[in-house]
Image (cartoon, rainbow, N blue to C red; front, side, top):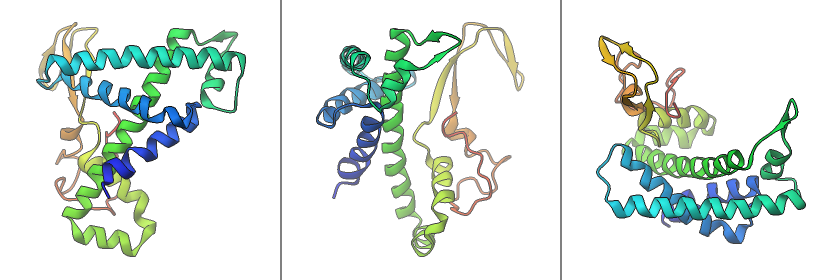
Length: 215
């Protein structure tokens, strides 16, 4: 089998589709858009070509259009899914606006399955490269929770995030002027030797990894 195509992609797409109420026969369509959006995000730090950015832009537009139609259907015929719950949710009389609903749906779908795909792939690769740890996990399935947390630390699905500084600030003696784009490197933080003993070693029984895999 192909671990990515046969397991890592179908599993989270199925779960997030069922949660949001996306018809299962539409899953592959939305998955394709999601993949293009995720690839275009690499432009924040990697030299991707303009065709990747354009494909991501078109995919975002098509995804928004799709969820706009789905939201309209759920307003008239709510179901037991998360999308219907988001439409009905209110706080102090305020409900999510349509742009807020749309951005939430796109975020949930893209982030909700792309990260899982990469975790499954990276995690399996790490275990294959560390056969002793793999055998420990095979011998004791009770270690699975800690193993997943350690895999998130060791080679997480998200390696960086971008933030815009809104005020002047100084971190570790480095001045960061307001308006500067800052890239936070999760991969580096998760291998910080001042925080983790033997940070480059995979240890599925590591005590409280406290990783920054998701920021």
